[in-house]
Length: 217
View 1 (tube, one colour):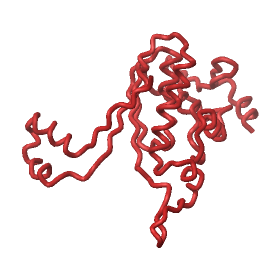
View 2 (tube, rainbow, N blue to C red):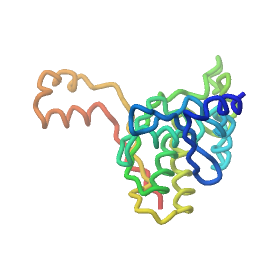
View 3 (tube, rainbow, N blue to C red):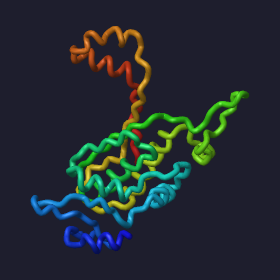
View 4 (cartoon, rainbow, N blue to C red):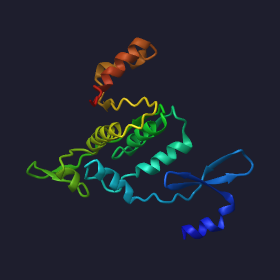
């Protein structure tokens, strides 16, 4: 079906070779540019699982493929973009950003946000039992989904450093981990003075626990 669609619309498509594959763009005849086609080939959902297995990580069903996120970043953002993934999941976006920087010398940064969803529940005896669909992750030692994200960033960074392409990349392969916590009453009382710059800093420190960067060596 994909081949028939490509053949039918070939006059409106632009094929750009990259490595051993081709990227497909739609020609915009009224502008001197191209936009992404609604047809993306050679990227499957199964490849997302393969990406994780290469890093020795298990326990996450149907993660986003790294190739797909890299493709979307390339067509949608400049090389110095800050890429936000508000549903970080297994951390695919972080790996995609680091890989792209390594490939083209980009200065991209990533921000990942996710809920610390537990992989277990407590039964009547107080014993931890894997949640439905999280058995593999729980058995692998992950207490929450965000632990998978952090582990992936560390392992992906190590892998990418080993495949350094010699580009002028600013990857430092480290990250900061912030956890939102309940504000103390004193912080709530000071919100009225939020316009004070120094007060803003103190308030932020009170409301967020800052974990030091997990620097990889």
